[in-house]
Image (cartoon, one colour):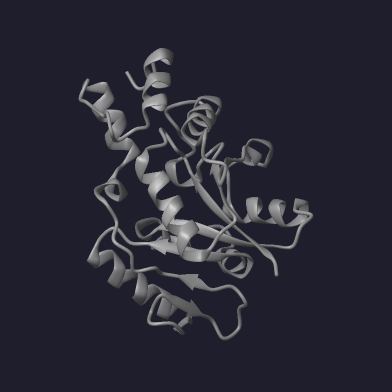
Length: 217
C-alpha cells in the first residue's frame, strides 16, 4: 500500500491555529502518515506578493510545528521556478519521492472554488487527491456544484467523490470546524498592525517571533 501524505500549501503570512486545525482534520479523516506544510515562495494568486519574506514565513511554520512530528515543513518551492504553481510542486514531489506515495492536497473551499484558474488545473486533478474543507454552508453547496461540473460523482455519502476517468478522488469531509477555520492571515496582520490582541489565534511561539522580528507593523 502506498504511503499517504498530505500537502498543505499557502502563503502562511503568518501561520495561525486555523492552518494547524485543518491539517489535523485532514490527517485524521484520510489517515495520512504526515502533512507537509509548503509555503509558496512567490504566490501567483496574490500578485506574487507576501508581506513577510519566505525565510520569515518558513521560520514561523517551523516554530509552530515543533513538537508535532506528524506535521512537517517543506521549503521546496524556494528552489522551483517562480511564481509557485501547484503543478510544478506536484511534479517535483512525484519525481523526487523514492517511496510509493499518494498525495492529498489539503485546501479550503474558498480556494478550491478557484481551481479552474490554476495553471494546468486538469493535470493537477490527475496528480493528487484533494481534501476540501468548507468554512460555511454556502461554500459547501458551491463546492459540490463545482465538483459535479468537473465530472465527479459521490461514492460515499457525499464525502468522497470519484471521477470515471481519473484515479484521484476529492474528499469532502463533513466535520465540525471550530472558529479557527475562519481565521484569515490578512486579518491577523491588520490586527497586529492595529495592536489588537491575537493571543490564542496565532501560536505563542509564532507571536513571539513576530514581535522579536518586528513583522507586520
